[in-house]
Image (tube, rainbow, N blue to C red; front, side, top):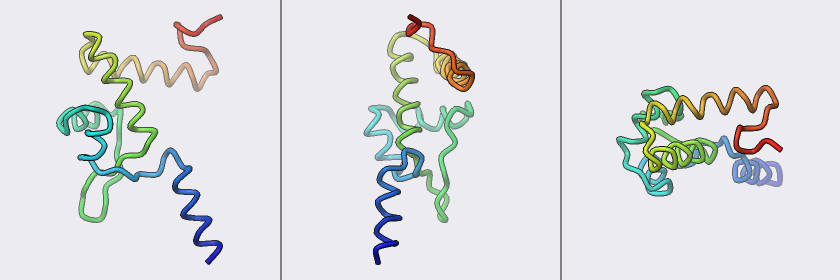
Length: 103
């Protein structure tokens, strides 16, 4: 029982665990479900599919969707926001600070 409990606790702490349905994810980010589907079509988000084919999103994916929403709210087209985030991810993998955060 202790091992099973530890596995459950790990899921709570795992930002990549796909815990949120599309409806809940859209509500949390403050966007529509078609908006989330557009992020999937762009390749920025790839939600896990349940056995029944329903999309499941992780907290990490919701953070990315929220970042896209911020950029779109500032007037950026969705495709441009997705490209910016993809480039930010590349910079992060290379260990470079994003442009606005350089010292």
